[in-house]
Length: 92
Image (tube, rainbow, N blue to C red; front, side, top):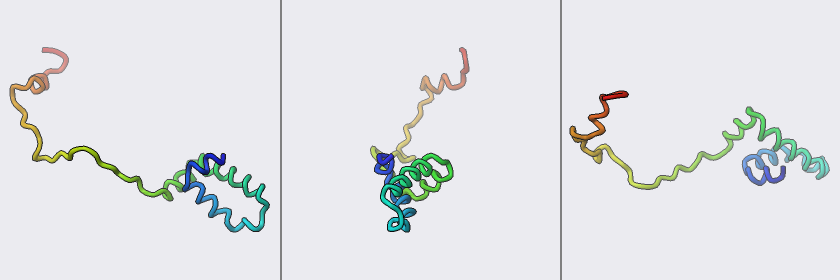
């Protein structure tokens, strides 16, 4: 389960913040056990998973390729086979 903690930095941060008050009070073995159990519960339960999604940063939207504007729309010709077939459904 340690792999789950390293794979999800927001989950790790939430668990460490929750355990911070207990670092000087509990043995390291107990803290490791609590980390594993919290990772399972927080990662699997639908309510806590939704709360963790709110902690995550917004996704970065990356754009590529040319942008199409309405001024660049192609002109449709009336003799186009696509327009001729548009009115027919299932036959001639």
